[in-house]
Length: 126
Image (cartoon, rainbow, N blue to C red; front, side):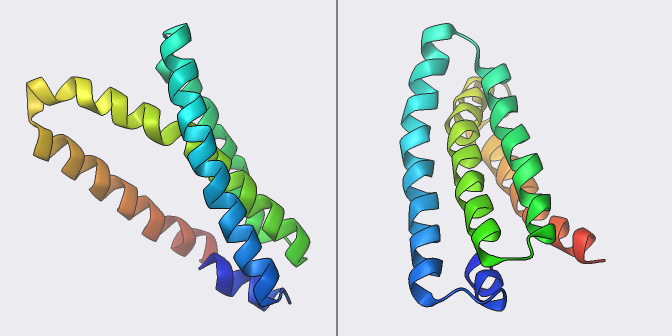
């Protein structure tokens, strides 16, 4: 969806692929850093909320991006937010598997994640 959105704002193929690639690169880079940092300070929840906060600001701001430059920047920021929160959430989920079971925990998490990805853009579009 990001590529189509950038194209609708006039971005070319090089910009679309560069923004997506940089977003994924920073996602993987910050995943390792945030996981290591959270283990060092022993605080996963506050750091996870930072990641959610970054996405909470970046994703809705895409709706107001009038130029492809702003949208590309927000897509990159979105990757950073995802990279901060994703490994921490997965680590926290791993601690609950004893009580609820691995399949159920990850299934519910994935279902909620996909529901949010589907309903979020529909709510904003509406």
